[in-house]
Length: 340
Image 1 (cartoon, rainbow, N blue to C red):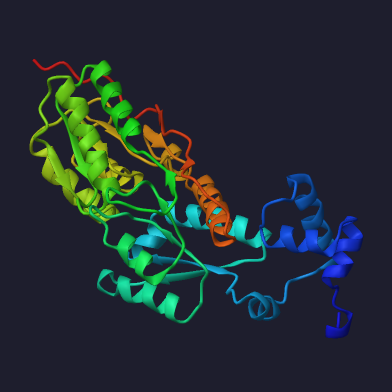
Image 2: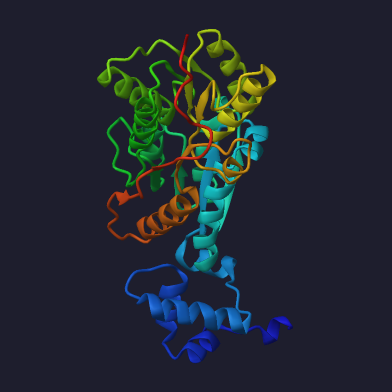
């Protein structure tokens, strides 16, 4: 199809049986359009092969029609950890339906603030997602200074006027520890995430609280970096204390821990029970299949993208509930062996 033959927004409106204004509202993710009508408009646009002119839209309303995500993680970890592809897939699913784009920056932690400042100064995005919240996160104040609308994934531990996706990892860790206690375990270790990450700190706190409430020791803990190598190293260190179970802060470290146990001749779950976190796809296919905590990063991506687009459009946006994490019991946990 030549440029002259490209379908227009008028063609989409005619095919969907609505006004041009309704089409504009639907394609820009604005409120006031019924979901059935929005879907009919999107289907009509798809059938006609209509695509937005981002240049024209941006010039007409002084918007970038893009949102940003800055990740201060090593690129190799992003490729290995299934959380990030799933979250980004959810974001992209929502953005593609609304004719929006995602600007992703992967930067060293020392350059993270500069990444946000570049996005704001260049006008490349209309808002951002804030992942990997830190303890006493200074980025909240930075985004306020830059005037960048933002949605945080979890509620920060500092004052914030950004709407949050209300992710709470603590009930999942608590359920994991209680499951092990009910099986009869009394020496339950933890491979934690980095202490400066809020979710790493909260998962560790939940592990400690559950053990304390049961009158059990909380001495067997090693912080790692969410990577397989970090999980393997932490497992080797913890096994010197002879725990009967280990709760990991993510599946990637737990799967590495399984491999270390097998390498050392420790039978899982007969001699060591193992629990992960995230319920990644691979968790059900390792041997033995991994008991873990189910979360839904794809849903988080979709929901947080919808909230951010509404915020950018000037609509009031409250904190958004997230489905609670749930323990998925598989074959990597069992009662501990009786000691002679």
